[in-house]
Length: 558
Image (cartoon, rainbow, N blue to C red; front, side, top):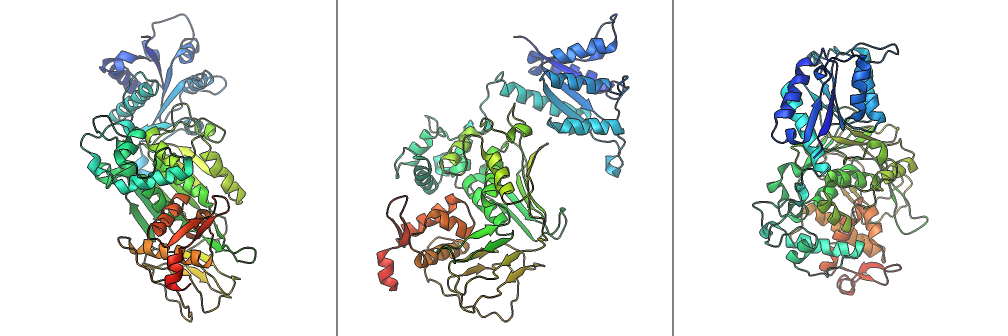
């Protein structure tokens, strides 16, 4: 096969040893040496031509441009441009694959930059369009270059290795799969996407249909992440870490911190709930309809989409975890991973093909209604935020991929839930502060204009130590116990039950708005109520809705 040409570009005097050592390593490696042919300028024989005439054609004709950037910018031509920047520009103009490796400043530990201003400007220019890695020693440079070149070979299919999501786990068996989770998925997929398998299909049939099970009974990594009884027993870093901060920086004290574990569906639901229960929300009135609208400071669908993308498209071979950080002025969602080859941050903002890095994992999440398949997610996030009058979200690819959703610019210190002007009778409102630390400063819960008797309101301050004086609230609820269901979920189920009792013929979307969680979670809660014969769906898909069962109406004399 034709060798893949590597053009190694840098200030020669600063990286003289690294350039030679990197060439020797690539040529001597048993795998890389079969595919790559590195080039450095100092190995060129003496020629009767200028330096630019010698190295610029090599940069234009290479397959991969490898840039090593450090403290020095290098000598400049008449236009004030160094050879390294000229080579980078040539590679960019010729649409070459570019790999950038930046050496940390020598005095970074003392926070003193030794980098020349023009080199700093050049690095800033590069970072706008190219993924870059940092290194502080040749060993780190060698390892990061190796990983980048192996990834290139895999994406170009020079190496035909199974990706993580399609790899069969060497110890897990069908006993590690939760049959109930599989059955629930089938019901959700039938309703959302017309999934062809019937309710009641056994786990083996479902996994085989989803390409998650081999003929000899081996299960894929994706099957464990989607339906495992304990996914983190096999993939400990598949957990999701969520934190809330008082200000705009990562500083203590941290008012809320959670590490969530479970299947990818459970991780999505838990992470979305963490965010939505800690941002501003305004509860509407019933003056126009029987439904109570809840308007969140950040659009629910944008938050959900960003979290779903992070969990679905992350690099599961990384030792890092998805991290979600809620600051006073923004929400940041980090995931360990890179955009697929050929897809840049700029292309994310325009119509683009869907290129999921974990297709076997993404497909069931799509079937369950959590994501779209056509590459519209990023555009939807942007539109939802702009429609709400928020700043344009930021998307950044560094050593991790980060999405930033900007909160409203008003003072959002603490939690502010405003009930001012709400009608005297409020039914079915669920404000969940579960998991918030015992001491919360700046929490403002305004009950101005609300009568003393509030029916069906579930305000859950579990774990919160707030003393409210002078409030006489009579919470009338329904005494129903769900066996095997944790207490926090019991409260939400009772809240939904009471809401349906007061508002017959509601749909899943109404419950979604009520509890501030995803549509899939609302469907799952409604299924629990249906399985306990507390509610039923009557009428057609378009005009029908949920109501209390006749047995319940008779038993409770409703």
